[in-house]
Length: 141
Image (tube, rainbow, N blue to C red; front, top):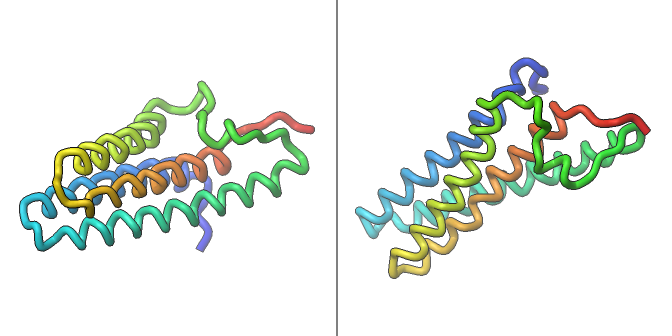
C-alpha cells in the first residue's frame, strides 16, 4: 500500500518518535525486570532491521531520482531549511533520543545485552532518510 504525499508528510516523523518511545519503554522494563533483557535485545534488533530496510529503500529511490535531479548523500540526512519545525524536531529529536537512551542504558547497566540498543538508532536514521527523499526538493540536472 502506497502512502500518499499528504499522509507521508508526518508519517515518518511520528513513526520515528514511536520507535524512540518503544526503545525507551523496553529499556526501562529491562532495567526493572532483568528477565526482560531479551525483550530489549529483540526490540533493538527489530528497530535496527526496520531502519536498515528503510534506509536501503530510500537509497534506491534516490538512485532512481538522481537520473533527473542532483541528489547527494547529505540530502538524505540534512533536511532543507524550509522543512516544518515539527518534522525536524520529530526526526532529529527521535534520532537524538535513541542515541542518548541506548548509550545511557549501555553505560549504566552491567549486562552486555544493553549494548544492542545502540543499533536501534538506525531506525530513526532510516525514517529521516525516507522522509528526506520523498519530501525533499532537489535541483534538476
